[in-house]
Length: 144
Image 1 (spheres, one colour):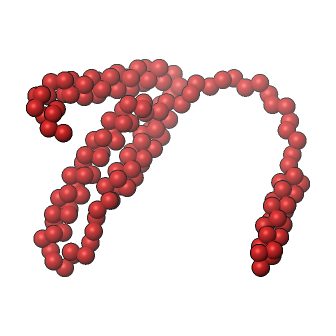
Image 2 (tube, rainbow, N blue to C red):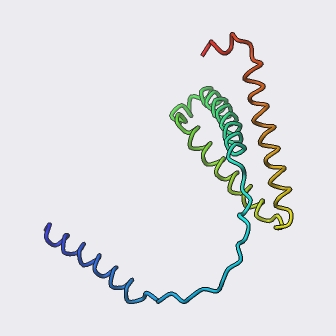
Image 3 (cartoon, rainbow, N blue to C red):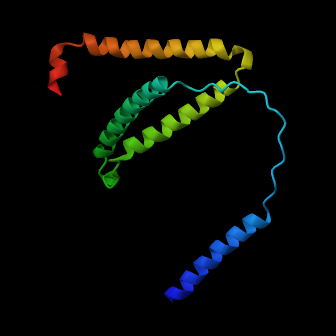
């Protein structure tokens, strides 16, 4: 039985290689291409801040949803532990996907100013987080 599976595996590999070689085309020399600017995307720090905010709201929403489920004995079989990270990843990836798609509609002439605005927004969000971390009372920093 092992010999049959091994020979089928070898046959599949040989068929895939032979088909890819048979249908391969020789590349034609390409015309010179003018470089296009890189597409705009959401900056990494802004994406991280969005992930933190969405994570907070998802956590709070799941917490209140679990408290609501605890009130009803008929729904006590529903367990939502561990769903927070999955829902957060789903929402954040969808949010960033559509934000990057929306940035793709910006005309090429307006990309420098848009990049500057996004950088400024990233700096404001980052500085606000740093300001909050530095101005919190020392007691909240040591509580852990």
